[in-house]
Image (cartoon, rainbow, N blue to C red):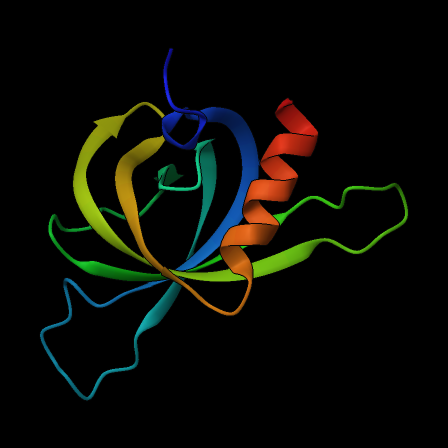
Length: 119
């Protein structure tokens, strides 16, 4: 039986991320990009965006998690990840990112929400 921590659940959750991989001028401001977490676990994410993320780069992300109950606010967790690879798809770029560090109780919040939404 496969370990639930490694299962990738089908999501459609918003992600904001910082990427400086193509920055030539180090004084230039880092741009915030928008993407969608299409597949997600507590260990990694498959991120779709219009930005090609370089391989083997640290990525700072804010993952918006739908609320557990109607009327509650969405949760935003902050994660530092490491890009494993990017491929070109119809909808843009798909990047596989492994999670390195969650801020505060982000990992527990993600675990609770994945368990609630997917059993």
